[in-house]
Image (cartoon, rainbow, N blue to C red; front, side, top):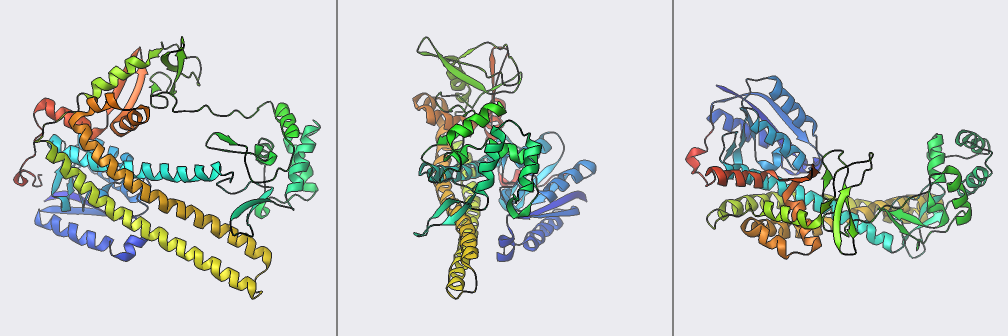
Length: 499
């Protein structure tokens, strides 16, 4: 008998309750082990969110396999039960490449090992990459929703001390001045501007004058410093590095006083530089110090990239954007397959899409349930207010909190829908890229080129006057397979478990 481990997983407690059960996975995998003469030494199970990397039992399983060298096989129902993000994929990929471990994706009839054919590794990598892409799109769309709120002058998060999140007469969420806390904010700036107080002494004085921080919690001098640097109190706010002066909340202090305090702190707020102006800004890193490469225009038309030198002076030479372009075209030119080989990629995308549908639908159902629960609470609280069971202040504060949570959940729902659309677009893009990546790259605009690079390239560093570019694992596997000739799909008879 050959030793094996079993790993089972559901992506949420709701999935566990709705029938995507751990017991059913364990039963299925135990039967598979018995039929294939595999001796199960230990079973590991996780019930966690699909987006979260570093799962508890997943890590324990890898540590156990590392400690017990007699373990040669890991059994899992299918790819999305084993991993859902590129971090987990990287761990499994290294495990396969640097040991004798064999991974069984039982429902998919796939056995992965160091000796697996390149196309099998490619399909495994495609599914992992698409899972990462879905989660990345989800985060991006959520951020976009928050930015849209900021553009309307509404701070998209909880108000800082001195303000409260409140419901206006029209039912919309607003940020209002907290009559109890705002005077202490004004007092804080006035005292510090005199130059007679340190952060510690000003904290002590405010406490003596009756300042009570949120929830009665203790606060430290770092909290005082954060408040003194927060331009929000002048009637503006920053969101994702951008300053919004059309803020709808009222100022507590004047801008002149705020600037006076900043001069005394000697750390005036510095707005972040804008990204995305140049084709490769934010995509390349210095191979010497790890800082990002930034770009600038020379002689009014030539674009050059160089290390930001954030960690200290870096003497690497400038890099022409035209040379970067050629390097990416050369790399992507290696991603070209025949018509016959497209079917292997299509197979991986089909399986990835089925996994995505299941994950997407479960997430949407869970969010919809949470939205309904919050709406029920809001409705009941209003009736309790009318019946005078709760006070006006309590109704205001609780309803503001629930509306904020509901608003965030609604944004997540919208983000899932947009991420779903992006997923389909990117799946189609992967197929097109596999056929003619370099040709497509030449024809794209800046944003499209950036999207292609993020989708295909895992590493882009600059050192010694040269760019080091590496494709994500599935595309690397395809390239190596083509070079060795070990790429075309095998028949099912060659995919049986091996000792």
